[in-house]
Image (cartoon, rainbow, N blue to C red; front, side):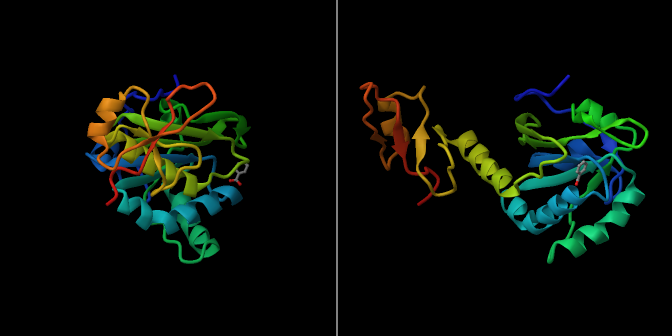
Length: 222
Ligand code: BEZ
């Protein structure tokens, strides 16, 4: 069964490149990203893990624990890290890569891709991204096939949106980035919005005459 937004994500214990991991303990009270890879020593995965190594300070700045998973054992993961760091200059894989050689976790989290199989004909994991809130609930998931590498700028962007909208009555529009104007959520009346947003909001006129597009400066900036 695939995880749905709002579900409490399953706990697990597993070996990783940083020793045994108890997932709930590891993410305790933090935002977290769990992302999967089809296989060790594969080209696209090597680029992705290198990029995440370089972005680690950005995840830390946002209070997000990072954890990767691939369907191989710890020895294989450890052997691969040298290649990842050599391919991406400056990158350090300073986060655990969980071993899932039996696919137990991949099944638990609904990560398997029936189109990608290993030499024994067993499905590999797709490129799943799970962003988990401090309440252990799934806030966002993205699923890419093995042949399409992820954009981790986009992953950081959605984390910024998730963390902002968890705390303020705003939504973020298309291509939003930190510092851009936000939208007042439709369920908030104009009166309530006036109280909530001291910097005010503007209502955009549209041909329908409806007043549903309301813009406000990002509320947590000075
Ligand atoms: C890769 O990471 O390059 C990859 C893995 C599995 C299938 C296709 C590409």
